[in-house]
Length: 273
Image (cartoon, rainbow, N blue to C red):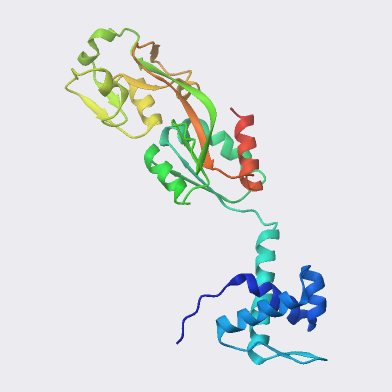
């Protein structure tokens, strides 16, 4: 089977001429000289190694290959038009930190799903979410990183303040004497203190961490917004020096104009933040 590299620039001249079966009408529609139309079709035929049009002074006819090519182009155009003009709801793929999903994102999902059916949510670590966005596996990701590049742009959603929660009496200078409840080995308590307690509970769920602290099983560092709905819980909030303040960002690919379904989702997020 022979291999060729098709120059798609010449397909338009062929398609318009084939539809009109007239070179002069094709030239007027394309706003180029009739000789240019004829030349482009000849170059296309040379590339394919197949004659597509039989020319005469009075009539233009398509060869069998010309008819097949025109039919294929027309099917492609119809399918392309259907895709671009589709009014069906499109799936939005969201990547988010586990803690944000549990404590902040649910009301946004509830509001969005009142009028939309297509939503997919996955949790992962910030760097993984960022890479997945670039790879096209997500439309939107939520991370603490402000990513501004040729490929990605970020919008600040809110500031995330971290606090220590624990029993009513806590000596922050001797936290190593109290059991810790941490998210993972990169938890803020792990970073702040070199000396650590004998008992450490690791659980990758912010909601579970808060419940464990409420049961008196230790102290933990959590985002302040995650405990707002737990007002009846028994733990106390402590200010802890050295805890960073961070922002939560919504990141998307750097579209010149956001697709409508993503733009609407972003609008809902702005309203709830």
